[in-house]
Image (cartoon, rainbow, N blue to C red; front, side, top):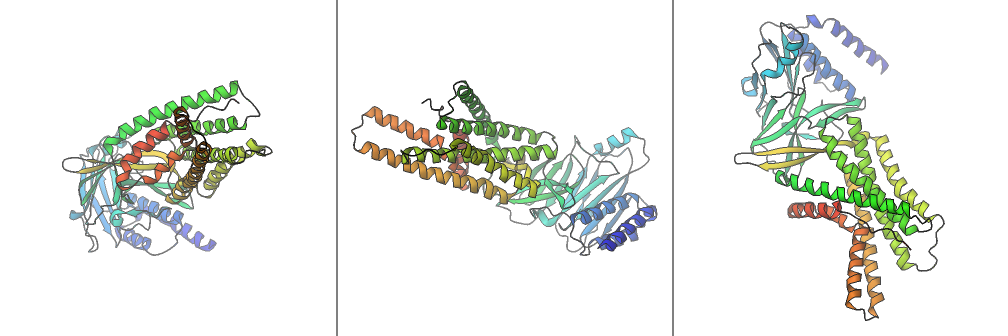
Length: 499
Protein backbone atom coordinates (compact mmCIF):
# COMPACT_ATOMS: atom_id res chain seq x y z
CA UNK A 1 0.00 0.00 0.00
CA UNK A 2 2.88 2.39 0.83
CA UNK A 3 4.55 1.58 -2.50
CA UNK A 4 1.33 2.46 -4.35
CA UNK A 5 1.14 5.79 -2.54
CA UNK A 6 4.74 6.59 -3.46
CA UNK A 7 4.14 5.72 -7.10
CA UNK A 8 0.96 7.82 -7.17
CA UNK A 9 2.77 10.77 -5.60
CA UNK A 10 5.67 10.41 -8.02
CA UNK A 11 3.32 10.27 -10.97
CA UNK A 12 1.54 13.41 -9.77
CA UNK A 13 4.84 15.19 -9.24
CA UNK A 14 6.12 14.30 -12.70
CA UNK A 15 2.81 15.38 -14.19
CA UNK A 16 3.03 18.75 -12.47
CA UNK A 17 6.56 19.21 -13.78
CA UNK A 18 5.45 18.57 -17.31
CA UNK A 19 2.03 20.20 -17.15
CA UNK A 20 3.07 23.06 -19.42
CA UNK A 21 3.71 20.54 -22.16
CA UNK A 22 0.46 18.67 -21.62
CA UNK A 23 -1.42 18.11 -24.87
CA UNK A 24 -5.18 17.61 -25.32
CA UNK A 25 -4.51 13.97 -26.21
CA UNK A 26 -2.68 13.42 -22.92
CA UNK A 27 -5.44 15.21 -21.06
CA UNK A 28 -8.08 12.99 -22.66
CA UNK A 29 -6.11 9.94 -21.54
CA UNK A 30 -6.04 11.31 -17.98
CA UNK A 31 -9.84 11.76 -18.03
CA UNK A 32 -10.29 8.19 -19.24
CA UNK A 33 -8.00 7.01 -16.45
CA UNK A 34 -10.17 8.83 -13.89
CA UNK A 35 -13.19 6.78 -14.98
CA UNK A 36 -11.51 3.49 -14.13
CA UNK A 37 -12.61 1.89 -10.84
CA UNK A 38 -9.84 2.61 -8.33
CA UNK A 39 -9.54 3.64 -4.72
CA UNK A 40 -12.79 4.66 -3.05
CA UNK A 41 -11.09 6.97 -0.58
CA UNK A 42 -12.56 10.49 -0.73
CA UNK A 43 -9.11 12.08 -0.63
CA UNK A 44 -8.04 10.18 -3.77
CA UNK A 45 -11.15 11.19 -5.73
CA UNK A 46 -10.76 14.80 -4.64
CA UNK A 47 -7.10 14.71 -5.67
CA UNK A 48 -8.03 13.49 -9.16
CA UNK A 49 -10.53 16.32 -9.60
CA UNK A 50 -8.06 19.00 -8.44
CA UNK A 51 -5.38 17.57 -10.70
CA UNK A 52 -7.76 17.68 -13.67
CA UNK A 53 -8.52 21.32 -12.91
CA UNK A 54 -4.82 22.23 -12.88
CA UNK A 55 -4.18 20.38 -16.12
CA UNK A 56 -7.05 22.16 -17.85
CA UNK A 57 -5.77 25.53 -16.66
CA UNK A 58 -2.34 24.83 -18.20
CA UNK A 59 -3.06 22.71 -21.28
CA UNK A 60 -1.77 24.07 -24.59
CA UNK A 61 -4.17 24.21 -27.53
CA UNK A 62 -4.75 26.39 -30.59
CA UNK A 63 -7.78 28.64 -30.90
CA UNK A 64 -9.98 30.11 -28.18
CA UNK A 65 -11.69 27.02 -26.77
CA UNK A 66 -11.16 23.31 -26.26
CA UNK A 67 -13.68 20.49 -25.70
CA UNK A 68 -12.76 17.03 -24.46
CA UNK A 69 -15.21 14.28 -23.63
CA UNK A 70 -15.14 10.75 -22.35
CA UNK A 71 -18.00 8.47 -21.42
CA UNK A 72 -18.94 10.27 -18.17
CA UNK A 73 -16.76 13.43 -18.10
CA UNK A 74 -16.82 16.48 -20.34
CA UNK A 75 -14.18 19.23 -20.04
CA UNK A 76 -14.28 22.64 -21.68
CA UNK A 77 -11.64 25.38 -21.67
CA UNK A 78 -12.23 28.98 -22.83
CA UNK A 79 -9.70 31.79 -23.26
CA UNK A 80 -11.29 35.02 -22.01
CA UNK A 81 -10.19 38.64 -22.15
CA UNK A 82 -11.01 41.52 -19.80
CA UNK A 83 -13.61 42.80 -22.28
CA UNK A 84 -15.66 39.65 -21.59
CA UNK A 85 -19.38 40.32 -22.18
CA UNK A 86 -20.83 37.02 -21.00
CA UNK A 87 -21.03 33.43 -22.17
CA UNK A 88 -23.88 30.98 -22.65
CA UNK A 89 -23.16 27.26 -22.95
CA UNK A 90 -25.77 24.76 -24.07
CA UNK A 91 -25.42 21.00 -24.23
CA UNK A 92 -27.37 21.07 -27.49
CA UNK A 93 -24.47 22.93 -29.14
CA UNK A 94 -21.73 20.83 -27.55
CA UNK A 95 -20.40 17.48 -28.58
CA UNK A 96 -22.28 14.81 -26.67
CA UNK A 97 -22.23 11.07 -26.39
CA UNK A 98 -25.34 9.05 -27.23
CA UNK A 99 -26.06 8.43 -23.56
CA UNK A 100 -26.54 12.15 -22.74
CA UNK A 101 -30.11 12.86 -23.74
CA UNK A 102 -31.13 15.51 -21.17
CA UNK A 103 -30.25 19.13 -21.90
CA UNK A 104 -28.42 21.55 -19.65
CA UNK A 105 -27.16 25.12 -19.97
CA UNK A 106 -24.83 27.45 -18.08
CA UNK A 107 -24.88 31.23 -18.48
CA UNK A 108 -21.96 33.29 -17.15
CA UNK A 109 -22.39 37.06 -16.59
CA UNK A 110 -19.97 39.76 -17.75
CA UNK A 111 -19.20 40.47 -14.09
CA UNK A 112 -17.30 37.17 -13.97
CA UNK A 113 -13.93 38.73 -14.94
CA UNK A 114 -14.26 42.10 -13.21
CA UNK A 115 -12.48 41.20 -9.98
CA UNK A 116 -9.58 39.40 -11.67
CA UNK A 117 -9.04 42.18 -14.20
CA UNK A 118 -9.25 44.93 -11.56
CA UNK A 119 -6.38 43.42 -9.56
CA UNK A 120 -3.92 42.76 -12.38
CA UNK A 121 -3.92 43.50 -16.09
CA UNK A 122 -4.11 40.06 -17.62
CA UNK A 123 -3.79 39.28 -21.30
CA UNK A 124 -5.79 36.08 -20.91
CA UNK A 125 -8.08 34.41 -18.41
CA UNK A 126 -9.09 30.79 -18.53
CA UNK A 127 -12.58 29.59 -17.76
CA UNK A 128 -12.82 25.82 -17.34
CA UNK A 129 -16.03 23.82 -17.14
CA UNK A 130 -16.05 20.21 -16.00
CA UNK A 131 -19.27 18.24 -16.34
CA UNK A 132 -19.66 14.92 -14.56
CA UNK A 133 -22.51 12.67 -15.69
CA UNK A 134 -22.05 10.33 -12.74
CA UNK A 135 -22.09 10.99 -9.00
CA UNK A 136 -19.26 8.60 -8.08
CA UNK A 137 -16.83 11.50 -7.70
CA UNK A 138 -19.21 13.39 -5.36
CA UNK A 139 -20.66 11.02 -2.78
CA UNK A 140 -21.70 12.46 0.57
CA UNK A 141 -22.41 10.55 3.76
CA UNK A 142 -26.14 10.39 2.98
CA UNK A 143 -25.73 9.05 -0.58
CA UNK A 144 -27.93 11.88 -1.83
CA UNK A 145 -29.85 11.55 -5.10
CA UNK A 146 -29.09 14.07 -7.85
CA UNK A 147 -31.26 15.04 -10.79
CA UNK A 148 -29.99 13.17 -13.89
CA UNK A 149 -26.81 12.44 -11.88
CA UNK A 150 -25.42 15.67 -13.34
CA UNK A 151 -22.68 17.71 -11.63
CA UNK A 152 -21.78 20.87 -13.55
CA UNK A 153 -18.63 22.69 -12.44
CA UNK A 154 -16.86 25.89 -13.44
CA UNK A 155 -13.69 27.70 -12.38
CA UNK A 156 -12.04 30.94 -13.48
CA UNK A 157 -8.26 30.82 -13.28
CA UNK A 158 -6.65 29.94 -9.97
CA UNK A 159 -8.75 32.26 -7.80
CA UNK A 160 -12.21 31.63 -6.34
CA UNK A 161 -15.16 33.64 -7.64
CA UNK A 162 -17.74 34.53 -4.98
CA UNK A 163 -20.55 37.00 -4.23
CA UNK A 164 -21.55 37.76 -7.81
CA UNK A 165 -24.30 40.36 -8.03
CA UNK A 166 -25.40 38.96 -11.39
CA UNK A 167 -25.59 35.21 -10.72
CA UNK A 168 -24.55 32.26 -12.82
CA UNK A 169 -27.70 30.67 -14.28
CA UNK A 170 -27.81 26.90 -14.64
CA UNK A 171 -30.71 25.04 -16.25
CA UNK A 172 -31.27 21.30 -16.25
CA UNK A 173 -34.10 19.65 -18.14
CA UNK A 174 -35.49 16.23 -17.25
CA UNK A 175 -38.30 13.85 -18.18
CA UNK A 176 -38.93 12.38 -14.72
CA UNK A 177 -42.07 12.52 -12.59
CA UNK A 178 -40.99 14.35 -9.44
CA UNK A 179 -44.35 14.99 -7.81
CA UNK A 180 -43.22 13.91 -4.34
CA UNK A 181 -39.71 15.35 -4.50
CA UNK A 182 -38.27 18.66 -3.46
CA UNK A 183 -35.61 19.90 -5.89
CA UNK A 184 -32.89 22.13 -4.45
CA UNK A 185 -29.95 23.72 -6.23
CA UNK A 186 -26.79 22.92 -4.27
CA UNK A 187 -23.02 23.18 -4.57
CA UNK A 188 -20.30 20.79 -3.44
CA UNK A 189 -18.66 21.79 -0.16
CA UNK A 190 -15.47 19.86 0.43
CA UNK A 191 -14.95 18.04 3.72
CA UNK A 192 -12.32 18.94 6.29
CA UNK A 193 -10.90 15.43 6.75
CA UNK A 194 -9.57 12.59 4.62
CA UNK A 195 -12.49 10.37 5.64
CA UNK A 196 -15.21 12.81 4.57
CA UNK A 197 -15.13 14.07 1.00
CA UNK A 198 -17.77 16.70 1.67
CA UNK A 199 -21.46 17.36 1.20
CA UNK A 200 -24.05 19.36 -0.69
CA UNK A 201 -24.97 22.86 0.51
CA UNK A 202 -27.63 25.29 -0.80
CA UNK A 203 -25.76 28.43 0.32
CA UNK A 204 -25.63 31.11 -2.35
CA UNK A 205 -28.08 29.34 -4.68
CA UNK A 206 -31.72 30.00 -5.46
CA UNK A 207 -34.00 27.41 -7.04
CA UNK A 208 -36.82 27.89 -9.55
CA UNK A 209 -38.94 25.54 -11.67
CA UNK A 210 -40.15 27.47 -14.73
CA UNK A 211 -41.82 24.30 -16.01
CA UNK A 212 -42.39 20.73 -14.74
CA UNK A 213 -39.43 19.53 -16.83
CA UNK A 214 -36.92 22.30 -16.03
CA UNK A 215 -34.98 23.35 -12.94
CA UNK A 216 -33.28 26.77 -12.94
CA UNK A 217 -30.48 27.57 -10.50
CA UNK A 218 -29.21 31.07 -9.72
CA UNK A 219 -25.85 30.88 -7.89
CA UNK A 220 -23.51 33.71 -6.92
CA UNK A 221 -20.23 31.78 -7.09
CA UNK A 222 -18.29 29.25 -9.17
CA UNK A 223 -17.86 25.64 -8.07
CA UNK A 224 -19.56 22.28 -8.77
CA UNK A 225 -23.34 22.46 -8.91
CA UNK A 226 -26.14 19.89 -8.93
CA UNK A 227 -29.85 19.59 -8.20
CA UNK A 228 -30.57 17.66 -5.02
CA UNK A 229 -33.64 15.41 -4.96
CA UNK A 230 -35.29 14.94 -1.56
CA UNK A 231 -38.53 13.18 -0.72
CA UNK A 232 -41.02 15.79 0.44
CA UNK A 233 -44.68 14.68 0.37
CA UNK A 234 -45.80 17.95 1.97
CA UNK A 235 -44.46 21.38 1.03
CA UNK A 236 -44.83 24.60 2.97
CA UNK A 237 -46.03 27.67 1.00
CA UNK A 238 -43.68 30.63 1.23
CA UNK A 239 -46.62 32.89 2.15
CA UNK A 240 -46.77 31.24 5.58
CA UNK A 241 -43.10 31.84 6.38
CA UNK A 242 -43.57 35.37 7.77
CA UNK A 243 -46.57 34.53 10.06
CA UNK A 244 -44.84 31.45 11.48
CA UNK A 245 -41.59 33.34 12.06
CA UNK A 246 -43.49 36.17 13.77
CA UNK A 247 -45.38 33.78 16.04
CA UNK A 248 -42.14 31.97 16.93
CA UNK A 249 -40.29 35.22 17.63
CA UNK A 250 -43.01 36.65 19.87
CA UNK A 251 -43.76 33.35 21.58
CA UNK A 252 -40.12 32.48 22.26
CA UNK A 253 -39.47 36.00 23.58
CA UNK A 254 -42.42 35.76 25.99
CA UNK A 255 -41.29 32.31 27.10
CA UNK A 256 -37.73 33.56 27.68
CA UNK A 257 -38.96 36.45 29.84
CA UNK A 258 -41.30 34.18 31.82
CA UNK A 259 -38.54 31.63 32.42
CA UNK A 260 -36.13 34.35 33.56
CA UNK A 261 -38.78 35.68 35.96
CA UNK A 262 -39.37 32.26 37.49
CA UNK A 263 -35.63 31.58 37.85
CA UNK A 264 -35.07 34.96 39.54
CA UNK A 265 -38.00 34.39 41.92
CA UNK A 266 -36.61 30.99 42.81
CA UNK A 267 -33.15 32.43 43.50
CA UNK A 268 -34.68 35.19 45.63
CA UNK A 269 -36.79 32.82 47.74
CA UNK A 270 -35.04 29.48 47.48
CA UNK A 271 -35.95 26.48 49.62
CA UNK A 272 -33.31 23.81 49.58
CA UNK A 273 -35.73 21.11 50.75
CA UNK A 274 -38.36 21.85 48.07
CA UNK A 275 -37.64 19.26 45.36
CA UNK A 276 -40.75 20.22 43.36
CA UNK A 277 -39.53 23.80 42.95
CA UNK A 278 -36.06 22.57 41.97
CA UNK A 279 -37.50 20.36 39.24
CA UNK A 280 -39.65 23.22 37.93
CA UNK A 281 -36.66 25.57 37.79
CA UNK A 282 -34.48 23.02 35.99
CA UNK A 283 -37.23 22.64 33.41
CA UNK A 284 -37.41 26.43 33.10
CA UNK A 285 -33.65 26.64 32.54
CA UNK A 286 -33.86 24.03 29.75
CA UNK A 287 -36.79 25.89 28.15
CA UNK A 288 -34.85 29.16 28.36
CA UNK A 289 -31.76 27.66 26.70
CA UNK A 290 -33.90 25.97 24.04
CA UNK A 291 -35.64 29.20 23.07
CA UNK A 292 -32.39 31.20 22.93
CA UNK A 293 -30.54 28.64 20.80
CA UNK A 294 -33.57 28.22 18.53
CA UNK A 295 -33.69 31.94 17.77
CA UNK A 296 -29.91 32.04 17.20
CA UNK A 297 -29.84 28.97 14.94
CA UNK A 298 -32.21 30.43 12.36
CA UNK A 299 -30.40 33.78 12.45
CA UNK A 300 -26.82 32.56 12.18
CA UNK A 301 -27.57 29.97 9.48
CA UNK A 302 -28.45 32.81 7.08
CA UNK A 303 -25.33 34.82 7.89
CA UNK A 304 -21.95 33.73 6.48
CA UNK A 305 -20.77 31.99 9.65
CA UNK A 306 -18.03 29.32 9.70
CA UNK A 307 -19.18 25.74 9.50
CA UNK A 308 -17.72 24.99 12.93
CA UNK A 309 -19.87 27.70 14.54
CA UNK A 310 -23.02 26.36 12.89
CA UNK A 311 -22.10 22.82 13.94
CA UNK A 312 -21.62 23.94 17.54
CA UNK A 313 -24.90 25.83 17.54
CA UNK A 314 -26.79 22.89 16.02
CA UNK A 315 -25.32 20.53 18.64
CA UNK A 316 -26.30 22.98 21.39
CA UNK A 317 -29.84 23.23 20.03
CA UNK A 318 -30.12 19.45 19.92
CA UNK A 319 -28.77 19.20 23.47
CA UNK A 320 -31.21 21.77 24.87
CA UNK A 321 -34.12 20.04 23.10
CA UNK A 322 -33.16 16.65 24.55
CA UNK A 323 -32.72 18.23 27.99
CA UNK A 324 -36.10 19.94 27.78
CA UNK A 325 -37.82 16.68 26.78
CA UNK A 326 -36.01 14.81 29.55
CA UNK A 327 -37.04 17.31 32.22
CA UNK A 328 -40.64 17.07 31.02
CA UNK A 329 -40.41 13.34 31.62
CA UNK A 330 -38.95 14.10 35.07
CA UNK A 331 -42.01 16.22 35.80
CA UNK A 332 -44.21 13.26 34.86
CA UNK A 333 -42.19 10.91 37.06
CA UNK A 334 -42.39 13.32 39.99
CA UNK A 335 -46.14 13.70 39.49
CA UNK A 336 -46.50 9.94 39.63
CA UNK A 337 -44.59 9.84 42.93
CA UNK A 338 -46.74 12.58 44.41
CA UNK A 339 -50.09 11.01 43.46
CA UNK A 340 -49.23 7.33 43.53
CA UNK A 341 -46.83 7.04 46.44
CA UNK A 342 -48.23 9.27 49.16
CA UNK A 343 -46.06 7.66 51.81
CA UNK A 344 -42.39 6.76 51.75
CA UNK A 345 -41.41 8.88 48.74
CA UNK A 346 -38.07 9.97 50.16
CA UNK A 347 -35.19 9.26 47.77
CA UNK A 348 -31.62 9.98 48.82
CA UNK A 349 -30.15 12.87 46.74
CA UNK A 350 -33.34 12.88 44.68
CA UNK A 351 -32.83 16.21 42.88
CA UNK A 352 -29.13 15.52 42.29
CA UNK A 353 -29.96 12.21 40.60
CA UNK A 354 -32.61 13.87 38.44
CA UNK A 355 -30.08 16.55 37.39
CA UNK A 356 -27.60 13.84 36.40
CA UNK A 357 -30.25 12.30 34.15
CA UNK A 358 -31.79 15.55 32.88
CA UNK A 359 -28.51 17.24 31.96
CA UNK A 360 -26.06 14.34 31.74
CA UNK A 361 -27.81 11.86 29.42
CA UNK A 362 -28.48 14.44 26.63
CA UNK A 363 -24.87 15.65 26.93
CA UNK A 364 -23.53 12.11 26.51
CA UNK A 365 -25.71 11.53 23.43
CA UNK A 366 -24.66 14.77 21.74
CA UNK A 367 -20.96 14.32 22.58
CA UNK A 368 -21.12 10.78 21.21
CA UNK A 369 -22.54 12.07 17.92
CA UNK A 370 -19.89 14.79 17.69
CA UNK A 371 -17.16 12.24 18.31
CA UNK A 372 -18.42 9.64 15.84
CA UNK A 373 -19.59 11.95 13.05
CA UNK A 374 -19.73 15.71 13.58
CA UNK A 375 -21.22 16.19 10.10
CA UNK A 376 -24.66 15.23 11.47
CA UNK A 377 -24.87 18.87 12.64
CA UNK A 378 -24.78 21.88 10.34
CA UNK A 379 -26.97 24.08 8.11
CA UNK A 380 -30.26 22.33 7.40
CA UNK A 381 -32.38 23.42 4.42
CA UNK A 382 -36.14 24.01 4.66
CA UNK A 383 -37.64 24.38 1.16
CA UNK A 384 -40.53 26.79 0.72
CA UNK A 385 -42.62 26.59 -2.45
CA UNK A 386 -44.17 29.64 -4.10
CA UNK A 387 -46.58 29.36 -7.00
CA UNK A 388 -46.69 32.16 -9.51
CA UNK A 389 -48.66 32.55 -12.70
CA UNK A 390 -46.27 30.75 -15.02
CA UNK A 391 -43.88 28.79 -12.84
CA UNK A 392 -43.22 27.25 -9.46
CA UNK A 393 -40.16 28.24 -7.49
CA UNK A 394 -38.45 27.24 -4.28
CA UNK A 395 -36.93 29.48 -1.65
CA UNK A 396 -34.45 27.79 0.68
CA UNK A 397 -34.51 28.72 4.37
CA UNK A 398 -31.64 27.43 6.48
CA UNK A 399 -31.10 26.83 10.16
CA UNK A 400 -28.35 25.15 12.16
CA UNK A 401 -29.83 21.79 13.06
CA UNK A 402 -29.52 18.00 12.68
CA UNK A 403 -28.69 17.16 9.04
CA UNK A 404 -28.74 13.35 9.27
CA UNK A 405 -32.19 11.81 8.62
CA UNK A 406 -31.28 8.77 10.74
CA UNK A 407 -30.22 10.85 13.75
CA UNK A 408 -33.30 13.05 13.34
CA UNK A 409 -35.57 10.01 13.29
CA UNK A 410 -33.95 8.29 16.29
CA UNK A 411 -32.68 11.07 18.58
CA UNK A 412 -35.25 13.76 17.80
CA UNK A 413 -38.56 12.19 16.79
CA UNK A 414 -37.94 8.84 18.51
CA UNK A 415 -36.63 10.37 21.74
CA UNK A 416 -39.39 12.95 21.81
CA UNK A 417 -41.98 10.27 21.04
CA UNK A 418 -40.91 8.16 24.01
CA UNK A 419 -40.98 11.14 26.38
CA UNK A 420 -44.38 12.27 25.08
CA UNK A 421 -45.82 8.75 25.32
CA UNK A 422 -44.63 8.41 28.91
CA UNK A 423 -46.13 11.75 29.91
CA UNK A 424 -49.40 11.00 28.10
CA UNK A 425 -49.70 7.82 30.14
CA UNK A 426 -48.95 9.75 33.34
CA UNK A 427 -51.49 12.43 32.40
CA UNK A 428 -54.20 9.83 31.72
CA UNK A 429 -53.40 8.15 35.03
CA UNK A 430 -53.51 11.51 36.85
CA UNK A 431 -56.92 12.30 35.35
CA UNK A 432 -58.20 8.89 36.42
CA UNK A 433 -56.86 9.43 39.95
CA UNK A 434 -58.43 12.89 40.10
CA UNK A 435 -61.77 11.59 38.93
CA UNK A 436 -61.71 8.77 41.47
CA UNK A 437 -60.89 11.28 44.20
CA UNK A 438 -63.89 13.45 43.29
CA UNK A 439 -66.26 10.56 42.64
CA UNK A 440 -67.40 10.25 46.24
CA UNK A 441 -67.70 13.98 46.72
CA UNK A 442 -70.39 16.35 45.56
CA UNK A 443 -67.97 18.87 44.23
CA UNK A 444 -69.30 22.38 43.56
CA UNK A 445 -68.99 23.99 40.16
CA UNK A 446 -66.02 26.07 41.30
CA UNK A 447 -64.19 22.88 42.21
CA UNK A 448 -64.92 21.46 38.74
CA UNK A 449 -63.50 24.59 37.11
CA UNK A 450 -60.45 24.36 39.33
CA UNK A 451 -59.93 20.75 38.28
CA UNK A 452 -60.20 21.76 34.62
CA UNK A 453 -57.51 24.40 35.10
CA UNK A 454 -55.38 21.81 36.88
CA UNK A 455 -55.70 19.41 33.95
CA UNK A 456 -54.74 22.13 31.47
CA UNK A 457 -51.76 23.06 33.64
CA UNK A 458 -50.63 19.43 33.77
CA UNK A 459 -50.97 19.18 30.00
CA UNK A 460 -48.56 22.08 29.53
CA UNK A 461 -46.30 21.02 32.39
CA UNK A 462 -45.79 17.55 30.94
CA UNK A 463 -45.25 18.90 27.40
CA UNK A 464 -47.90 16.68 25.82
CA UNK A 465 -48.55 19.36 23.18
CA UNK A 466 -45.21 18.35 21.64
CA UNK A 467 -46.94 15.25 20.32
CA UNK A 468 -48.39 17.50 17.59
CA UNK A 469 -45.03 17.18 15.81
CA UNK A 470 -46.03 13.68 14.65
CA UNK A 471 -48.86 15.09 12.50
CA UNK A 472 -46.63 17.03 10.07
CA UNK A 473 -47.81 15.26 6.92
CA UNK A 474 -50.54 15.52 4.29
CA UNK A 475 -53.56 17.63 5.11
CA UNK A 476 -52.49 17.91 8.76
CA UNK A 477 -49.29 19.82 7.93
CA UNK A 478 -50.55 23.42 7.89
CA UNK A 479 -52.91 23.17 10.92
CA UNK A 480 -50.22 21.28 12.83
CA UNK A 481 -47.60 23.94 12.08
CA UNK A 482 -49.71 26.74 13.54
CA UNK A 483 -50.96 24.72 16.53
CA UNK A 484 -47.46 23.44 17.34
CA UNK A 485 -45.85 26.86 16.90
CA UNK A 486 -48.43 28.67 19.05
CA UNK A 487 -48.73 26.08 21.82
CA UNK A 488 -44.99 25.45 22.23
CA UNK A 489 -43.64 28.91 21.49
CA UNK A 490 -45.65 30.29 24.41
CA UNK A 491 -44.56 27.36 26.57
CA UNK A 492 -44.70 28.35 30.22
CA UNK A 493 -44.50 26.22 33.33
CA UNK A 494 -46.38 27.03 36.54
CA UNK A 495 -44.41 28.93 39.16
CA UNK A 496 -42.41 26.88 41.64
CA UNK A 497 -44.32 25.64 44.61
CA UNK A 498 -43.95 27.75 47.75
CA UNK A 499 -44.82 25.16 50.28
